[in-house]
Amino acid sequence: MYIKINGKQLKLEERNSFKDKLISLKFNFNKLDYAIKFTNKKYINTVFFVQRVDIVLTDKDDKIIYLEEDVRSEKYYIHKKGTANVYLLPLGSVKYLAIGDIIKIYNKK
Image (tube, rainbow, N blue to C red):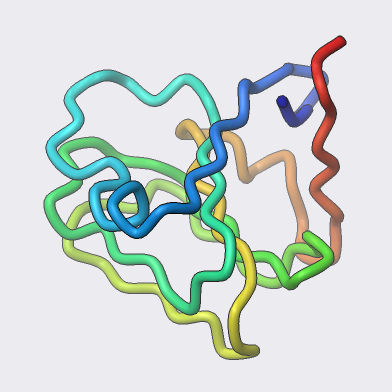
């Protein structure tokens, strides 16, 4: 699976298990060059992240409701409209997105 941002294809990793959601990017020193999607989350925290990322919060239909660029460690972002999806993207990705856009997921063929 992948998503397209500004004409670039970003590999998409979907993380659904409790362990994957808990660990996310904590203590990960490798540069994020792909997208990570967490489903059914109410919030995301960047505690113990050792790299900066862009965060996108979407509703259940993947319509963007919140964007945050260059997020540092020790931050919390809460989804005010209940549970939905959270995307962690490489730095600089959200400048090509806007609130109200829909994130489309493509399957590799």
